Length: 170
Image (cartoon, rainbow, N blue to C red; front, side):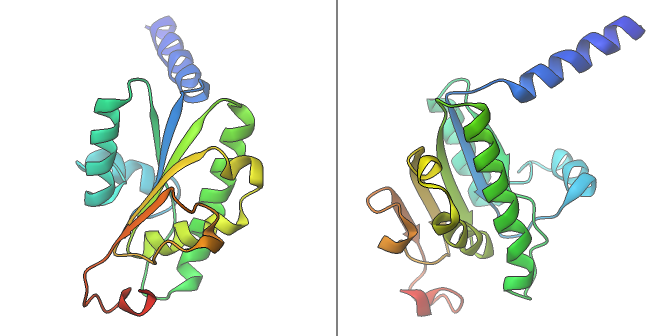
């Protein structure tokens, strides 16, 4: 039994460090941090991506075999920047580490509502070598795609016309 457990844990660790060809990194509209986030996310159907993110993730996994995904960890709240900052740090750190670990990887980023603001605020902070690995950015109820984000032509943002959070950013 002990040997089986060690084998399973070793296989899990190897899968976590393996380099997929593509990774979807998404900041949901509501999130969490640490072990509580991981535990809660594993028990709900959206797996920490939120509804919009999980829909996008499941469609991508059907099209790209072997891809990986990462839901950004941050304490989303109505406090604005103070809750976005940990998400920016988490997304930035994850992308830089993953790009270093997996030199051939490509990324698709995204976010919903406050998660879109996390994504938009992370993009200008990324090193150029990481930015070049981003093939698409998709945001919902989020800031518009502007040139200063560094992903011109690779970014699409969707927002309702009268959305009180993002309408001013249109």
